Image (cartoon, rainbow, N blue to C red; front, side, top):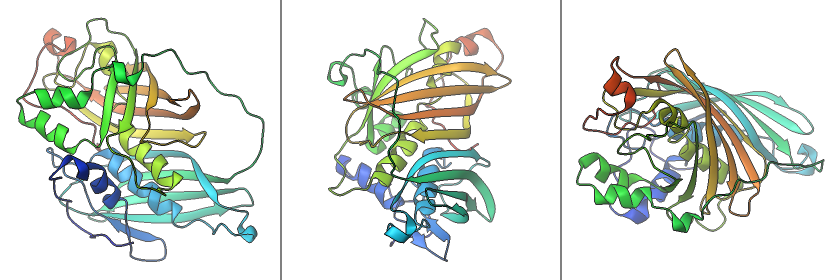
Length: 326
């Protein structure tokens, strides 16, 4: 593993570099037996995007697992993570990742991982891994949804807008998002529904031989940007609501079946509750064949100024928000 240990990765110079830069950020430098270092991806806010450090920490934890040999019970695959975002992170600095080996059994392994900047933790989580084993099986059925090819692309929307933030997002976004129904990028949804569906896919194919771990880590990376959208939709807010403040607080994921992030994934999302300046979002994720591949839940800070215009989402400022570490 070779990667810079501090600082921010440069902006992509072409659309073909977007995924490559994310993959580069997941190539960590080993600095000790169970410690690693990674770089930060650029953000206009100067704050680390939460999905980035989550994906890096998942890669670090996986690198401490027992080998895949018969004495180790076989290869172990990431199946769940539960964690908290603790502090804001700065894109100007690298990230230090420390892994604690909590348990290695015959079937399961468990790891606790902390991400640090300036010797202070910014993320803490526990992840679990299992040897591939047979067992009973059932799953939710995928909801009916229009094909992604029949829906408008968020990338096309950003490229059509003469706005510096839209240009930044179109040039750095490694994933295409296509909402079933109205998106919230430029204005609120007048229907105020707590349910939404969207398709998501990497904008370019991943390299041949990309591991299932990286596909799962990339899903963790990508989903952080959409998990609170059902709450925005229900509250009559949009990504441009004036004075709105958002940050990821905690995050849980379960991976049920193998998946590819460079093929379309359908997110079926809801927001069960919002209160006290916090909102909860959930997502059931299906692949193009209708298989239930993952389940996600996230609570985040969601604050808006007092006043009917802002709460209704009619006020706008000069930028779009994006979830970051709180």
